[in-house]
Amino acid sequence: MTEWRPREAVMSHVAGLGVTADHLRIDDGCYEVRGRDSDGNQLRLKLDPASLSILKLEVRFLDGADPLRYLPGARARARDVAQPPAVRPRRGPGVATPSGTR
Image 1 (cartoon, rainbow, N blue to C red):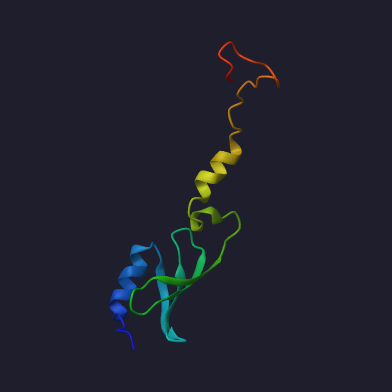
Image 2: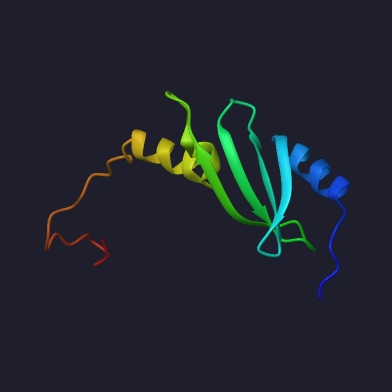
């Protein structure tokens, strides 16, 4: 059996993630934390008892909440989609340059 981290370490870790914990319990061999994020969205996290890595995350978003904060790299991709790529002029097919390259 792996070494379980103490409850105080779990609460400190979760607070570092920006979660205000309302409830901490053990479920299916994992820590389960219920609480709220800084925007007030309800969260339920399942954490590995030894490493405290997030195994499962459930979020109940408030109306108008931004779910992109929970998707790694999603904000950057959303910006890329919002800005069309720069258009480069294309040369027509079969147009040769003096050096024979395009």
